[in-house]
Image (cartoon, rainbow, N blue to C red; front, side, top):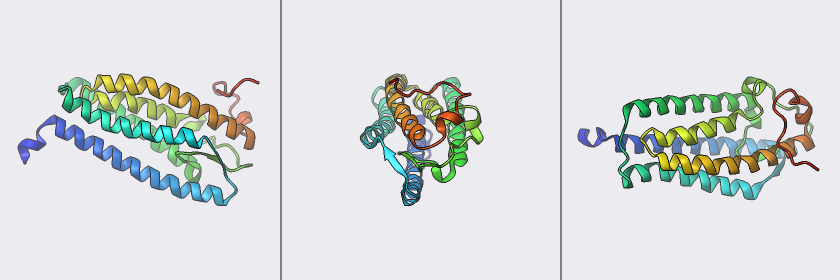
Length: 194
C-alpha cells in the first residue's frame, strides 16, 4: 500500500479526484444560488454554452491523469511544485471571487434585474477574476505532473470557451443591471458592437 502511494502518478490522480470533488461541491452551491436567483426574478442566458462548458471541464479532469498514465509523463519536482503553487493561487482567487459574489455566484449565466453590480473583493481590480482563476488552473493543474499536451490543448480551447461565456455574461449584466456603468474604469467590455 505504501509503495502504491509513493507512485507520483497515484498521488497526482488523487489530486485530480480531490479537485473533481471540490467542483461537485461548487455545483451544489451553484444550484442553490440559482434557485435563490430565480425565486428573486433572475434571468439566465447561454444555457447551451453552459452544457458545452461542463463537458469541457469534465474532459479536462479526465485528460489530466490520462495523459500522465498513458503517455508516461514524469514527475519533475521543480515544475510540479511551482504548478501546485499556481493551482493553489488559482483556487484562492476563485474562492475570493465566490465569497465576494455571495448568493450571486453561479456556474450558469444568471442575474437578478436591477441588482447592483458586485464591486467588492477581486472585482475592485478585475471584471472577471473567476475566469482568470480558471485559466491559471487549466494551465497549471496538468503541468503539476508534466501533462503539457493537456495544458496546451485545454488552455487554448479555454480561450474560445471564455470568450463566448464573457460576452454572454456581460450582455446579460449590461441589459439588466448597472454593470456597464459600474465597470467603465476597468478593461473595456467584450460585448458585441452594434
